[in-house]
Length: 89
Image (tube, rainbow, N blue to C red; front, side):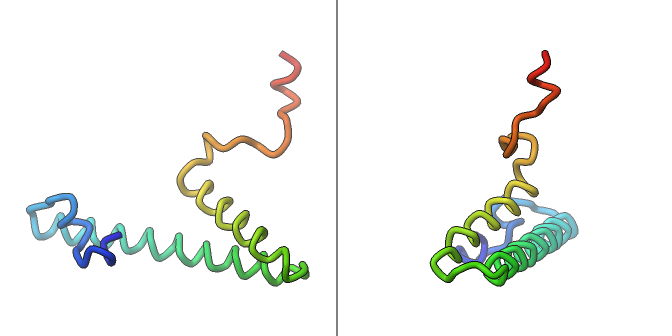
């Protein structure tokens, strides 16, 4: 988002301190770089998993969703299978 707006994350949040702004910008860059690398790796693995070309888009989308869920919503994401312990209650 900050690339689209041509400003740093610290500017978006109005951080005044120079050191604090630097730390926030570095943290956002670091996290964004790792998430982007994980997304690219997941998509590459999904596409090169031996599936048919028609299935590439769907597999890539699912791979992206798994990575995003890992970083931003692991607790909220529904599981693929029912929890046997929860069914016994």
